[in-house]
Amino acid sequence: MKIPIHREGWPAIGVFAGLNAILFLVAGPFGLLGVPLTAWCVWFFRDPERATPTGGQLVISPADGRVLPMAVAAPPAELGMGDAPRTRISIFMNVFNVHVNRNPCEGKVIALAYRPGKFFNASFDKASEHNERMAAHIRAKGADGADIDIAVVQIAGLVARRIKCDLVEGQDVTRGTRYGIIRFGSRLDVYLPQNFAPLVHEGQHVSAGETVLADLAAGTGANED
Image 1: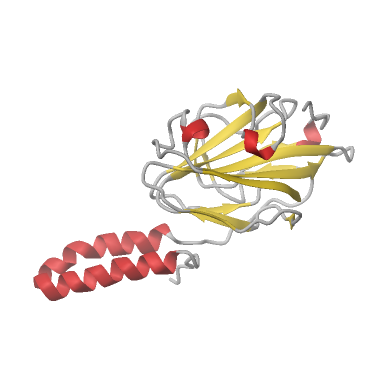
Image 2: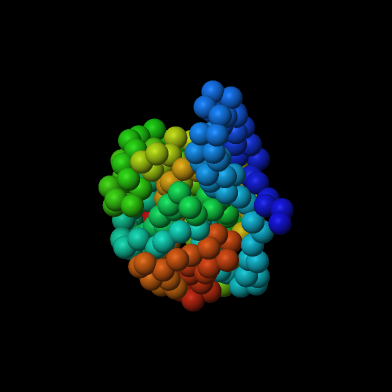
């Protein structure tokens, strides 16, 4: 079966395969010890197709993983979205999850902001505040045509050392399309206005491009920045 691989994965796969080949040359049959690691690297960068829900004003999961405890917090200050608290849905990706990230909704990219930081375990709540991150402000539309501002934040984890984001300011985005990847364990935060109730719960496993996080048609759409 053919496994689709994200283009960002090929350099890392090449390194793993090269080191494995050297191990075979130097240690003979002990090179077999490196085969599982090389196979895992290929598996890590898999990029399967997803069946994204169509219609309506849905917000879907931008990442595969497990929903962490939800919080009410202001979005990253560098996005300029104000300090009004929002519902934060956090998704933790372990090293066995698909790490390709997908746009959570239909809308326009208003702002992008990168901030360097630390590399705490991405499952810790403090990772949202202190870890290296790449944040995007996306403006969607509610059922009544009102603007709804959403933030989606890629956050590096304990062993993650590269965040890739392909978005550009002013770009129109489509729900479920690929927009980036984070290498080796990380987290995604989605900030929604508080008048939209999450449709997922703590501990739930979600799939990028498929699992519905919220329905923008279910609230008033009024931002409170």
